[in-house]
Image 1: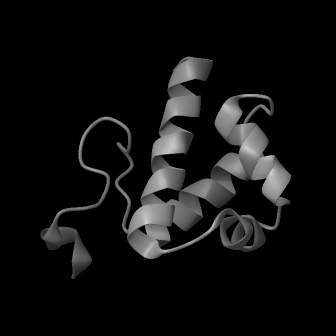
Image 2 (image 1 turned 180 degrees about the vertical axis):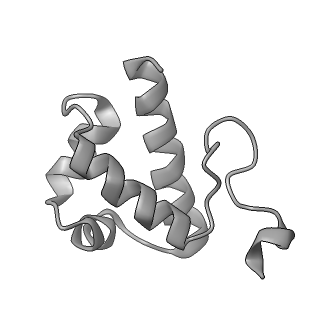
Image 3 (image 1 turned 90 degrees about the vertical axis):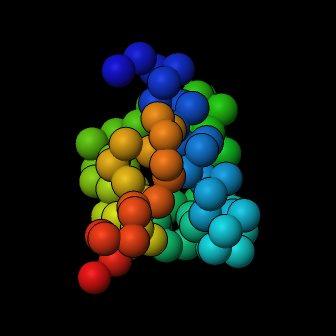
Length: 83
């Protein structure tokens, strides 16, 4: 996966959390134990996604029912995954 694709997926996920869950950047940063600036830099490609940050993001996204294929179609799991 290219750096651009990773950046695009991060931006899609952040937008999803902001628009559908009502989170702001500060709340997302707090949940991930990083600064809001780190979220900004991840979104614009200034910071590389580290292994530990990828794990935290994965846990966070899955908690909100976001599919592991986010950025390539439906962002949330279908209803069969909500059981």
